[in-house]
Amino acid sequence: MLRKRGDDGAFRIWTGLFALLVAVIVLGIGFELWRHSRLPIEKFGFGFWTGTDWDPVQEEFGALPFIWGTLYSSLIAIVLATPIALGIAIYIVEIAPSGLRKPLAFLTELLASIPSIVYGLWGIFFLVPFVRAIETAVAGTPLHRLPLFSGPPYGIGMLAAGLILTIMVTPFISSVAREVLRAVPMAQREAAYALGATRWEAIKVALRFGRTGIFGAVVLGLGRAIGETMAVTMLIGNNPQVSTSLFAPQYSMAAVIANEFSEASGDVYLGALFEIGLVLFVITLLINTASRLLIWSTARAPSRRPAPVKPAAAEAA
Image (cartoon, rainbow, N blue to C red; front, top):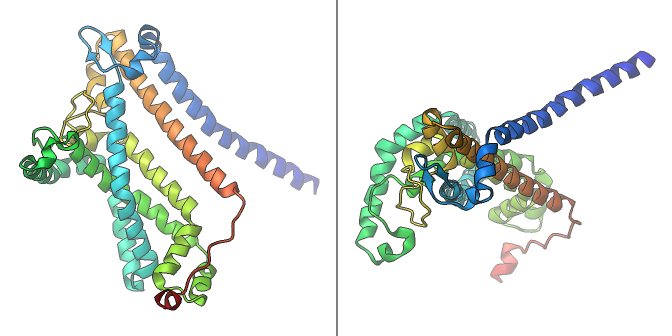
């Protein structure tokens, strides 16, 4: 018995060290990014976050265009991908025949395994002409006067980047949402059916039961979109400007690091790229922390009695 307790203690210590390793890695990444970006931090201060100039020759650097481009393209991707991904997950789990569920799930996971550079190449030769055709069609309508749809029809720009990100994050959101729906107890659906609910009403009950996990799936997709590099670099246009136009070429934080890091000359220039990496690191941590707090608050909230499901026959009457 004593030996068993000693083994349990050693096992607890070793697993605790492995868990501590995750925190050490996160702190180490943050420290290295901060250490290499001290020079621009001391020179520009908080103005680096709000500045719009990016001039390596004059050593004037501002990260706002890259922050804007990253958040804007990620927001477009999440807004478009979430309903598509949930529709895929609902169909596979709740509606699809049993013979189609595994092939559809496999194809969804296959999309998630395609390399980013392949998405970028496909986007250049297929998505960019498609977007250019849309922009050309919009140019002859009153919509072109709106800031959201202004700009020349290049094809390469924020809309193309947002669409490629939509395709890339959809499999991640769908896969996690599918597992969440599978984890919903069948008793929840059976209780809805027992009250006379339709199939769609029973699905809504399952969605409500698993809403916390579904929200986590959306956050996972947002994290993927924010950190995406190659496909966005190839399609966003790489123009450091702040614009609300979907047609305008813009830039992202990951893209500017990938494009300019190997050519950076001078300590301030190199440090500015490191600080952009630090900004990206901080934004990612803030988004994930906020989402985790929201999930915890939802999970710990006092349970409320669910609203009764009205039978379809009663509603028709």
